[in-house]
Image (tube, one colour):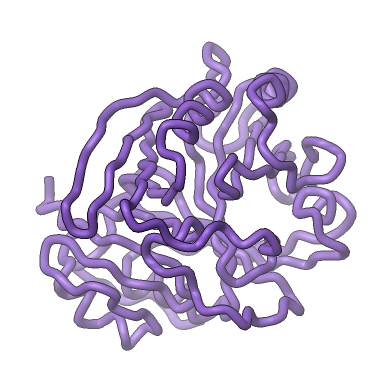
Length: 296
């Protein structure tokens, strides 16, 4: 992988994760009751017609958006190694208590087999559990032991603490690293390799081997690029805006127009151009909304 280039245009943070839903009220209740989120805002948009609820957890926000013209439901067959798979990790202070809370509120749909999994020391001995919300979106609960991760994740006064990262499956790891590092200005960490029985139970897959590169903006949650070795390319196109699987990362950005103009050179696709607000896809097809931060 080439060395990053110095750019004035760059992403400052992941400001919000946007999930498309078919049942706005019901899905919002799930996130509030099962996962500790709180409603911090509501909005309406006219084109395309939609309504949305913004939910907060710690310093992070997610948005649930329901379009008047519903898109395709979340594909039932999608697994962690599917090229369009995307989840985000919710940090908890007590994994057994968080799982009990989740179970009491309906439990979601398990992805992990055998409950929470203790990952090896090479990944910080984090305990993780993957599941789906009522709409099919994959999620993860993560518990960080003492001295691991962001200091915020050591708090024990609340059960649900915040959002640590979004994990996105990619098919070409080098291309994805160049896109996030050299175009968007993320810092890229060295490659980690996860495999073995624990990873298999966590992902609900037989014998996965996954190369992982964390890429981080200057502040807030980061992204984990997940390249599963031997994963078959998807025959289906990436989800369209409005489909339930079309998870979107909203990125506070300096120099939106400059990034849009150069996106194709880094394997990106411009879905909707703009100077203050643009929608693009990364080389794997994941949706990113660039919002001009103006240096504020």
